[in-house]
Image (cartoon, rainbow, N blue to C red; front, side, top):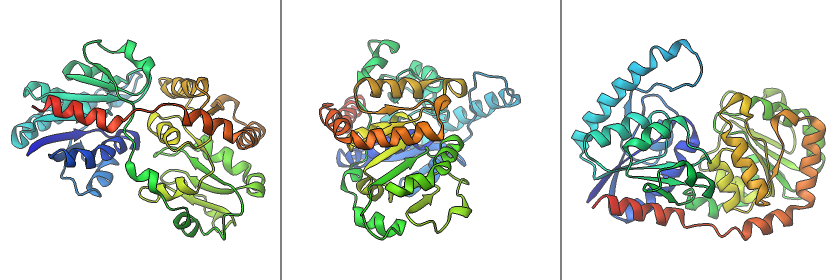
Length: 355
């Protein structure tokens, strides 16, 4: 049996595509083990799949000044040493990385041990972690056609993003019970703030909640520590820090969504043909990848984009009404997108490199 080490962490977007690949990899005869950070949020997600998990030291690579910039390189070096030891112990045939800072020492350790590594870049422009990891990779999978020009021509492969199969088989009735909605007499609005939550999106939604509840039931995934206890028991409003297996049922029930523009989240919305409003993390607070992702989807007619700088009670209510009124236009555009078989393409690449 072939062995594969998977890596990626920091946010759900660096983990769930790996989870999406696992069933197909097992079917292809791979024994899977995972390397993540010692206490990262990926640990719980991966252990829930029954996959052996190895935690290593991890540090963040920043483009801005922070006192941790002096200590984190030593954590990365320690993580590299731990990853090399794990490569020698597990002896994988191939490594697959979904990015995030914990993945850098793992990919570089694979190169040191002459083990082929494949990495996946979800966003239009490669993140800092993947920019470093590209040097140690045999192939670089990407999600957007626009990304190809930023990657080495001999390594770049357009694959799309792996989507968990179970997302297509949710049960709306389960979500109605979970959310304590009395029926499905109103359309359902699903709000996804990202696995870490979004203070700005949460505040904007709660500010207009009375108006939203006049026309919609609202499911609000607000991120860890962001529940508002004063809204507990509000009829038609269900708030959760995060959803894992329940998300499939929530998607089945949802008529439309409001989301950040992380690549993984928007690819799931596209695959499920959910009309959506994207509120990308502003370029002032990030490297601007979500803005690029959102604009790509807007250009293709998949999404309505509401920039964070223009997010007000009025603009949010206007966007919700406009998308709901024109929902069929968005559904039709997404249905004609000609999506790729991402899982099949990536598994074939992995099988080729593992020979």
